[in-house]
Amino acid sequence: MGQARFAFEIDEPTEGATACAFSPDGKMLAVALYGEPYIVVYDTTTWQKFTTPAALPLGSAYDCAFSPDGSLLAVAHSGAAVNVTIYNTADWSKVDDPASAPEGICFGGAFSPDGSLLALAMDTSPYVAIYDTSDWSRLSNPGTLPGGIGWACAFSPDGGLLAVTHNGSPYVTIYDTSDWSKLSNPANLPAGAGYGCAFSPDGGMLAVTHVGSPYVTIYDTGTWAKLSDPVDLPNAPGEGCAFSHDGSLLVVVDSSPPAGIVYNTGSWAKVADVGLESQGNSLGCAFSPDDELLVIASSTPAYLSLFETANWTDYLTNVLQVIFSRNPQRPARSLALHQAEGETGGGVRYGYDPAGADKIITLSWPAMSAGDLAALRAFFSGPARGMAYPFTYTDQAGTEWTVRFADPEIAASEVALDAYAVTVRLLEA
Image (cartoon, rainbow, N blue to C red; front, side):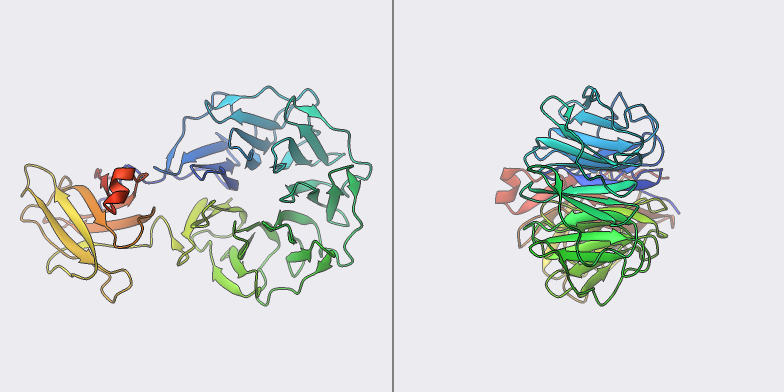
C-alpha cells in the first residue's frame, strides 16, 4: 500500500520514551529517551522536531522539565559526571554544569513555581539535590534524607513543599521548602516504592504512583489523610502521574496495557483508558497547558501517544477518515479540497458533520494521482482549534494513499474568517 504523509506529521521517536513535558506556553513538547539523542523537542504548531542541541546528554534520559518561564529545559539522565543537562530554549545552547554535581544517575527533575530552584531525584545518597538557578549553586542537603533511590520530585503550586518519591520506606518524603525540614509521614504510606508524584493545581492533593496495589495513593495535603482509592485501579505498578491544569483529571500510567487510566478527580471514577497503542510500560505523561491534549511516553512502541481529551481519540490516527470515490456526503461543516494545477483545476467543497451519522466524505476526480490533493481549507462553524486528521484515497490505478495533517498556528486574519488553510504534500513510502 502506498503511504502519503503530510509535511506536518509528527516524526515519532525511534527510541523508548521515558518522560515528556510541555513548555508553559504549549508551543514545545520535550520527550526524554532511553537511546540517542536522549532528548527530542517538538514544535507543537507543526509537530516537527527542533534542531537537535549540539551538546546532547551522554546517557539515557529519565525525565525532563521546563522552567516556569519556558527559557530553560532540564534533562535528568545517566552516563556522565554531571547527570543533568540544562538548555537555553532560545538557541538550545547548553548551560554550564553546576559546580557541585548531583550524585549518581538523575531520575527526576522539577523547577519550583517561581523558577528559582531546580530539584533532582537521584540513585545515590543524598538522593535529592536542590540548586539555586540564579548561579547554579547547590543548597545544603535536607537534614532528613529520602529513604533510598530517588525516582521523582514535584513542588507544590505555591512552592512551599517539595515531594520526593523513593525506593525505601516511607516511599514519599515531603519537605517544607522554607527550612527544608521533613514533614511527618502520612499515616497511610504508599504500599511500596514510590515512582511518580504530582500536586494538583490548587495544591490540595498529592498523587503518588508506586509498587503494590492500589498502585496510586492520593493525599489531602491539608491533613495528609489518604483519600479513598479509585474504583478502577491501575493494572500494574504506577510509573507516572499528572493532573490536568484545571485539576479535574488525573492520569496514571503503568507498565501493563492499556497503560494509562484517566480519573475524574471529583468522583475518582474512571473517565477513559488511554495508551492503547503501546504494548505497556508507559512511564511518563503530560497534559498540554490548555488541557486539550494528553501525551504518554512509553519505553515500548508506540513510544509516543497523543490523545485529544475531548473524546480520548488518538490525535495522530483516529480522528477522521476521508475515502476518495464517488457520491459526496453533505452535512454541516465543510471541507474545500483544491486540486493541483494541471489536473482538473478548481476546488470542490463538501460538508462533513463529525457529530452526525455520516463519517466519510466521498468524491472522485477524472484523473487521480499523488499530486491531486494540493491544499485543503476547512471552514468551522465554531472556534477553530488544532486537530489532526488522517485522509485516505484510492487512485485510478488502485493504489491506496493516506495523508495525515495538523493545522498550523492560525493567523489573526484567518481567525476572523473562522477558517484556515494548510498545504499538503504526498510522498509514496
